[in-house]
Every structure is written in structure tokens, then in C-alpha cells.
Image (cartoon, rainbow, N blue to C red; front, top):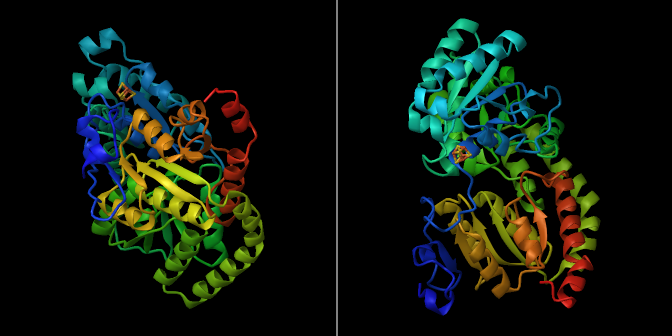
Length: 453
Ligand code: SF4
């Protein structure tokens, strides 16, 4: 692509291959690479990637072996809800200091595990290795193994030194930790039912998805990891099908479970009507149960009758508005583009932190000519393309929110901090309502007229 025709001076030379403009003959995009130094990537570190995946296990104790900052930075990191234990909402740290860096932190880690075991009798502890632990070389495997033997519980090391890659490496480290947890269950036992991988129960979304399956008679064996428990996770190897909602974080686990336990998997998305409908039907068909297929059709029919009039109200108010998307994974971005299409809106910019090549291929096919597509972007590029493309709204996460507001652009949080569910049928209505209330808020006129943006 000749970037000079579309991208001017703000884009770093090394970043140009990670940006493309959908057009005939110009669709090459680099992705799945380390971030460019100096680019101010919006990605989180490896440890953070691991923590977001494992943290929603509600009865696990999460010990962050590192300086206090790593623990406070990720304290209660997701808005994942629990139907029971609340211990996961704490952030335990070994609080490594200079002396520990010089002499090693293994004693401190052992003391932290001992204290938790003696006072609280946990069943499961995760120990996260942060940057400095990778540098000083503490043997966390040995410390965890000793604790497992002494206390007869699971103490799982998570190899997540922040500098050892990017957020995707953290997802993989978390998947490896989950596999280690599942290894204790061997044998041929089978349970007819599904595991839900990659939903983190933000604002209770896991409960919405589980309820659909309950209504159509499909048993949920294990939830990974939203509102899950130790006892439930170790049942996962017995399930007959894995469904993967957050493909970015959980595809590795699904592939490994297929190899180790013979469980096939399908990718699903419960964001937007189109993807929710196809996901429910695909799971019903994959389970091969005629009764479930029949009930799934009835459920979908009933829900569509209920919500379509509500969506029509928002379609009228949003028609022709221009959306920019910057989210973690490609699968979510694809669902969001379809949702905006359904609302009569146009996606003018779309990017992801960790999208895969095949996801970008799908994404390119469903956006209009002229849409800017970005991988692992930075605030300068976001500002540039949102301004050039005249975006009315940015859908992103907590790091993108201030940028949108400073530019006088509406914002929708589709990540950790939201308090209302955006998945399933009800979530599609919530999404449309939020997009409408923020895009059509009178505050933007005041800001623009006042010259504040
Ligand atoms: S980059 Fe390193 S020091 Fe910073 S939060 Fe991640 S693990 Fe901790």
C-alpha cells in the first residue's frame, strides 16, 4: 500500500504495515507481532493478560509475586460478577522490594502461601510471576510444588513476566495454568454438555448465556472463567463440546483440550442479534439433539418478537452515524461491525489489540470501502483516523475513553468496567440504547460550539 496517499506524517514508518485502508487491491495487514518500540501500544502486559483470564475464578486466591504496583494495577480488574465467593476480588502481593531483588523472593512467596493456607484453607491458589521475578529467576515452580505437597491443594504457577511478550502471551500463560489444573482429572468419563470458554461474566453476561442453554436443554458443565469455581473447572475435561466466546484468549485452550481430552470446539459470539442467533443454533446443531434445536428456534423467535420493536426505535435515531471500533480481539470487532450494520450505522475505523490474520480477513470482507483497519494501534493513530473519518462514536476500553472525550467524540465502554450486559438479546437492546444516549447527547453540541474539541 502507498501510505503516502492516505496516511500523513503522524504514523511511524515501522507502523505502516499494521494499518490498511479497505480498498480494491490494498488489503495486506501485518498482525500477531510484537508492539513497535515507541508506539505507545494500547496492549496490556503479559501478566495483565493472564490475570484478566484467571481472575474471574471466584474461589481462587490470586497471589501476585512481584512489586506492589503489579497487584494494585490489576486489583479487581474485571467487573466479573460472582454468584458466591468474593475472594477473587482481592489482590494479594508478595510486595517485592530492593532487598528481595538482590537476595531472591522465594522465601517471601513461601511465607505468603503459608499464611494464606494456614489462615484460610484455600483449595486453589494461582501464583503470578511478574517482570522482576523473570529477571531474578525465582523458581516459582519449586515453591508451588512444595506447597501443593504440604497442603494437599492446587497451587498453580502462572508464567507471566510482563516483558516476555504481549498480552496474547499472557492469555496463553493463563490457558496453560488452566490445563495444569485440569490435568488431575483423567479417565474416560463423559458428561453430555458444553464448556463455555472465554466469557468472564462482566455484568452477569455468563448468566445470560447459561440461561439460554438451560432453556433449550443443553447442560453447561464448566464455565471458563466467568463465575467459575475450582470444583467446576476440573470437570471441564469430561464435557462433549467447547464453545469459545473470546477467541483471542481461549482458542489456545480449546485446541489443547481437543488434543488432550478429545473435545471438539466451535467459536461463538453473543454480541448482536445476528451472532447470538447463529451461535445458539450452531451449538444446538453441534450437540445433535433435535429437541434442543426445536427449543432453540422457539427461544429465538420469542426473543426477536420481544426486542425488534425496541431496536427499531434506536435504528431510527442512529441511522447514518459513523462508528470507530478499537477492542481486544478480532471476533468481538466482527460482531460489533455487524451490530452497527444492523443499526444502520457505518463503521469507518476498526482495530484490535490481538486480532488474528483469519479474523482480519473476515473483518475486511464486511466493512465498506475506505474503512481504516488497524492492528495494535496507538493514541496518535486513533486520533488521526477518527478525526479524518469523522467518527461519531468510539467503542473501546478504559484506555480509549479519555481520548474520545478529549476529541469531543461519544464513547461506549465494551470492556472491563461496564455495569450492564451487552451480550445476548437483552444486551443488543442495551447496546443500542447506550450508543443512542451517548451519540445523541446534547453535550457534544455544547462542546463543539464552545470550541472545546
Ligand atoms: S509490565 Fe511488569 S512490572 Fe508492569 S505490571 Fe506488568 S508485570 Fe508488573
